[in-house]
Structure formats: C-alpha cells, structure tokens
Amino acid sequence: MNEVLPQLDELLFSSVEGVLVESVEVTDVVVRVEARTTTGRAACPGCGYWSGRIHGSYLRFPRDLPTAGKFVVVSLRVRRFVCGEESCERKTFAEQVPGLTRRFGRRTERLRSTLVSVGLALAGRAGARMTGAFKVPVSRNTLLRLITSLPDPAAAIPRVVGVDEYAQRKGRIYGTVLVDVETRRPIDLLPDREADTLAAWLAERPGIEIVCRDRAPFFAEGATRGAPQALQVADRWHLWHNLGEAAEKCVYRHRSCLRPTPQQPQEPQEEPEQATSSPWPTGHRFAERTRAKHATIHALLAAGHSKRSVARQLGMTLNTILRFSRATTPEGMFTGQWQNRATRLDDYKPYLDQRWQEGCTNAWKLWEEIKEQSYPRGYAGVRDYVSRNLRGKPQPVGPRPPSARAVTRWILTHPDALPEANRLQLKVVLASCPELTALSEHVRSFAHMLTHLQGDRLPEWIEAASATSDLPSLRHFAQHLLRDLDAVTAGLTLPWNSGVVEGHVNRIILWNLFRQAESLRPKVMLTSCHAGRLAMY
Image 1 (tube, rainbow, N blue to C red):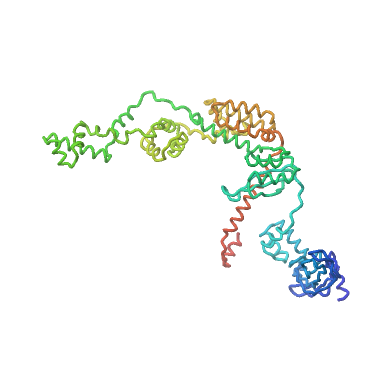
Image 2 (image 1 turned 60 degrees about the vertical axis):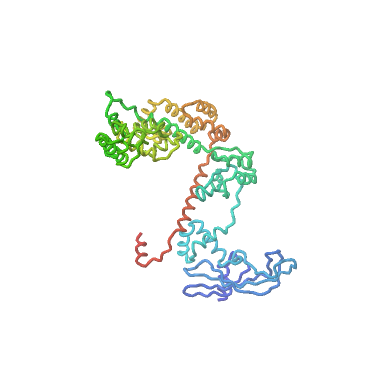
C-alpha cells in the first residue's frame, strides 16, 4: 500500500501542491480518500501576513468527481494558523488549498467547475437531470447559484452600442438594455428608462462612437448628454413602423374611396315618406293611449257634455280637455313630443347615413367615429338611431370593400411581392382616389431611400411630404422627422440598426414569462398511475 499511495497522490492531486494522500477506502457506494496538507506556512486572508504558528486542525469533507460510478469524498485535514499581525482583526484563520478548496466550499474546485460547465450549457432543470447521470446529483437552484457566483467577464468598452427599453411589468415598470452591436452580446441592464440614468452610464464610457436607438425622446436626450462625441443612429425598423401608422391613418381618412359609388335608382321611392307620416306607429302604447283619450273626449263632447263636465268625469284638468278638443285627429297631439325635439345627434345623422350606405353597420364603430368629430354624448343615442332608422334601409349590393388596414398593407408591400389579386384591388382603389395615389408614391419613395441607404435624399422627401394638404398624418410624420433629423439621416445612411437589441428584448420578455409560469406552477404529488401516464408523453 505504501507503494500505491504516491501513485494515487499523483493521480488524484497532480495539479494541487501541498496535499499528501494517507489512505484510500473503497466501499460499494463511496470512495473515501484521507489526505492532509503539508505546507509549513499560510497567508492570512485579512492582512496577508504569513504565519507558521498552528492553532489547531480539523477535518473537511469536500466531494470530488465520481470515479467508476461511485461517489468520491475527500477527508482532508487542514490546519488553523494564528495571525501574528497585531493590527489584523483576524486572530486565527484556516488554510485553503489552491485548486482544491475555498471558504465554506462543500465541493472540490474541479467538481465545482464541472457543475458550472453543465449549468452554463443546459441551465437549471436540464442541467440537474444531466448531473444525475454523472452521479453527482444537484438541484437546479444549486446550478443557478453556481452560475450567479461567477465573476462578470471583463468586457472591453464597446464602440457601437444599441439601446432599447424592456418591460418588467407592462405599463408600469420599464428598464433599459444595452447591447454591443458589433459582438451582438448584452452589456448591461439599467433599472429604468430615464435620460439621466442613460447619460450617467454613457459618460463613464467615453470610447463609445455610435449609439443605435429608437426615436424615444428620453433615449435621444440621454445619448446627447452622456455621449456628445457619439453619432446617434435612428433604427430603420421604427422609422418604417411609424410611416406605416401614418399611412394607415391617411387611408382611414379616405375610406370612402374604398367602396365604389352605388348606382342611384332611376325612380324615387315614396314608401319611406309614407312610413314616416305618423311618428307613432300603430301598437305603440303612448299612441294607443292618446287615441283612446281623444276618442272618449270627443264622444262626450258630441253627446252634449261641457268641457268642465268631461274634465270631472275623466279626472283630467281643464287645460288637457281643451288641448284634446282642439285636435281634430289623435296625431295632432303627437307634436312637441321628445321624438321630434332637436338633439345633439342631428348634426351627425347625415354622416351616419353615409357611413351606413358605405357598409359600416356596427353602431359602436359609428359612435367612435363621430366621437372623434366632437360628438358629446354616449353610445346609447347612436345605438337607438341605428336600430330605429337605419336597420330597415337597404345597403348597396356588391363585394365587401377592403379595410383600411388591408389597403395600407398593400401600399407598404413591395409591388413584386404583392399577389396578383391584391395588386388589382390596389390599382382599383388608387384609380378612384388621387390622395391615396399620392400616398403610395411617397411611401414607395421612402422605402427605396430606406432599402438603398440614400439618406441624402431625406430633406427632399420631407419637403415633398410636408406639401401634401390632403394627407395630414403623413405631413405630421414628415415634420416630426425634422426634430431628429441627424439621427434619422444617419439611420438611412449607415448600415447600423437596433435589430440585435430587439432580439435580446424578446429574450428578456420570454424569461419573465417563464419565471411567472414557474411561480404559478401547481405543486401536486402524482400517484404512480399519473406518473406512468405522464411518462408516456
């Protein structure tokens, strides 16, 4: 055995100095290796004083990598030294074996590094299953703790930085993610999306030359104050997205051009006028009650009763009897009722009739449209008007017109990538509306400038788009570009963009969703039958 121990010492601790193997005990499950340290002195971790004065010794049992499918436990005897430095707060300290142990460590350094590699490759649950196959089972939380305890890698100051926001809780809590666009790796996460926080972060890194961002004002202000030497680049995807929103508003404003003009009937119809001659149709409770009172009063008056006598017999006031006696027909009593009074909806009824003929039969949608036109009342009045006056009117017969969003999608799509059927529909729409034709030309001009990186043509495009009086949304978009003209011009000229930043934002969102799902996962004990069924999947 004395001849084997040096070989075991060289085999087990070849990369570790100052450790001597004393014995090896092998059982059916565990391999226990007894060893001790042999160094004469140790450095105090507090003050660095080298001490050789031994205070005592104790045993540590760190787990090591398995061998032959068996657990390996090292029974290591270490010593505690006395610190001779009077100013040091530590009176005694335990020695550590470099490459083998660390403070409060329950595993050897090589087992720890193996578990860290598994955690980095497979993360929590999958990594925990793999460590079980290695005969060193640990929980997923242990793997995550080992990963989080790793020191941050030394990162060089990036030259091109991408900035974007991410939602920790949508609508309430937002943060900022910063990515090295050249290496496509995340750099840092900021706790908010304030301009001061971003400016302070950029000020600490003067080597940044380019900042890729969207058109948010707080990012623009933070980049200007924190990195005045850097060139700001507006992201092209956000520019195209904003142009699409403006184009959709323009198409919706000219939605009447999406449906062909219905053919007018040759002979005027008189039936609606006859139907509306009596404001109260037969069967209405107020109309029937009024007709009955009118017939009773006129019958009593015709029989010779005086008006005061009729009022006493029917329990009515004299003024009511006088009004009924003056009305030759019951319909004469209907004048002045609430249905004939002027309402706030009267000014919007021609618009509602027009939209109904255009095919919009949703009362809620109609209410939202006139509400944008300063209609002060609620939905009930529009609903009643639609149900009483518009439901019976015939609608124009023909194919359903395309929606504003569909037409916008056709305009934003490259003509070569547009299906033939949609191309023909778009051609019909543009032929009937010169405003949408002008919109299509402006959008395609901007798309050509964006895809071919011709940012020098941007001032010319802004001037042409600002001159369109019939397309206010496009004009507003063009004028808004002037506020951030340098960044937009750089975005339409340089190849840099924020696409890699958006990818990391999606990963952060998915990670937050995963954490929420893990917190809501029910903890249920499965029976053997249920476990067998789950194993089938």
